[in-house]
Length: 203
Ligand SMILES: Cc1cc2nc3c(=O)[nH]c(=O)nc-3n(C[C@H](O)[C@H](O)[C@H](O)COP(=O)(O)O)c2cc1C
Image (cartoon, rainbow, N blue to C red; front, side, top):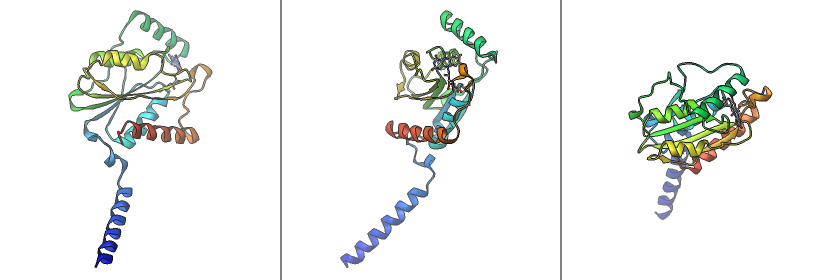
């Protein structure tokens, strides 16, 4: 009898673990995907690629930040404009609108610009009140890191629960290296994104 019970137990647990493996990762996410917003700024699509990886694993709504008046295409011109905006504290008006009340968790993705949080993301965090929400920053950069951007998010979201952010090297537009999140680099990024999401217990 004990053997029969044991065999049944082993068979049952084998079936349930096989089923768990088959379930889409989104189903394993710690948050209700309907309450997750992934808002990102991306000029050369590296941060967008990370945003898409997060969405694949967590679910949620992807929203790209767009400006009422887009930045210039020319790299030197955008660098100058961003430097002026950072200096003066100008917040460029957003074209993007978000029904923020629908979300409990907000992933906030952006490239490093001038070693700071880019002005459009400063606009977003000024415009929308994320008090009481979980805020999760992620970033790509040209190899110089996040600069002051994570600190600025803390300043602009004083009453949010801010989780550990993620950062990875993306393009180097200055040197003509634009989109890099493909092939081996995309695989490596995907692995790091998964490890980070597991560490912060989002998946
Ligand atoms: C205006 C501007 C300023 C930048 N400043 C920095 C910087 O200070 N440090 C850095 O590491 N990368 C800097 N970069 C490079 C971007 O952070 C990097 O290429 C990033 O991966 C771009 O992300 P995206 O493809 O999502 O636009 C800058 C890029 C631009 C366009």
